[in-house]
Length: 507
Image 1 (cartoon, one colour):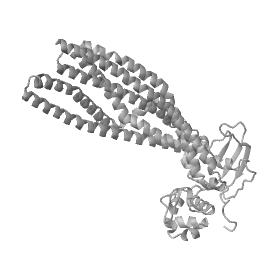
Image 2 (cartoon, one colour; image 1 turned 90 degrees about the horizontal axis):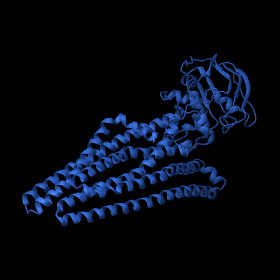
Image 3 (spheres, rainbow, N blue to C red; image 1 turned 180 degrees about the horizontal axis):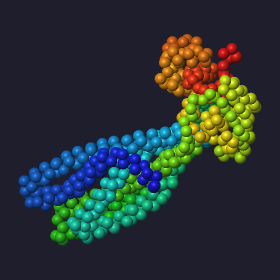
């Protein structure tokens, strides 16, 4: 529940619209509670007394109440949605910002499908509750208290009979909540697993087809889908049992009120109009109970989703600036490794052990070794994608842990093994690190990377749209664009991590 309260605090920024929605809710509730009194008046003093003026006035009163109720129902709905959409906007931004700032060690073990589910589905579940569910919950509480009070004032004997069913219904709800809450968290986990399988297959569809693994992947997806289905059915079984039981208890209470109320009408201690008004208030007493039932379902889902959302937001950032970090001045490019050892999170063995070397400005340093020997690890430590386990790395005498990440990485151009390109034009991809670069600078970088010739060969040239992850370009073309991107950055240090594997020898 603490996570859900944290989610509700996102509404504080939109307190004006939230307050407007709440006040509109109170007005709507007040009009609902006032309507049965007009109904009692039109029956007892209008129809029974055959007084047309009373009938006319109360009819106009009912019309006025309906207009007010419907008007404020609109403002309640609009303002609550506006506030919740704003809260969801801020929450999504908070999650994305945290994901962008989390170190490589987090992303190494995180599943993309799970993260996407949390950023989209879980945030939307929380938003739906903060926008509508919380107001429905407040509406139910206010109407429950208001209806119970009016019932006691109208006829306390009948009211006590009606109120006897409330504890029984609440007991059913509490039992339902304890059973269904953990289930919703499992459902969200299963949904994340399904999205992970989908995301992996969409990203690796060429590999799947190349190895004729479509049947295997289809079975894998069906298994994940079936697991989600079974968990959803488990939720349905609980809800299918709960609500009929609640309706049964409610019907018993209503029958008891009609029976005893009918006796009082026959005995002359209660008028027909009062009984009609009483049964109307009884429906207002039961309606909040049913609203609470559906809201508790939404509440359980929101609690599970809020927990998953704040799991990301609360994840500590392992690689970050020290409080006293300094800005790295323009570097000459001297890199010194001193007794550097490194272990990946969760690993019991060191990937690097006591590595020491010096790379002087202007030098070209090649790191050779067999697969898995730690070449990429060395490269990832220089821009502090990870922090060393022991030892130190310095650039121009500055320990990389003592300078700000922005000033460090802004002076390093790096081309990783995987040439990641983004949806957009070729120019936008080359200028990714320097969006204000001129056309001439972009073309010079492309020429230096031997990419200019094939780029101008496209009908749209540098404005050619690159598909997701560089789809539509060959591996060599993607690598050369990635190299051009690093060169345009004009770095003091240029790091190439096996970034010419798909480039021909002449290039």
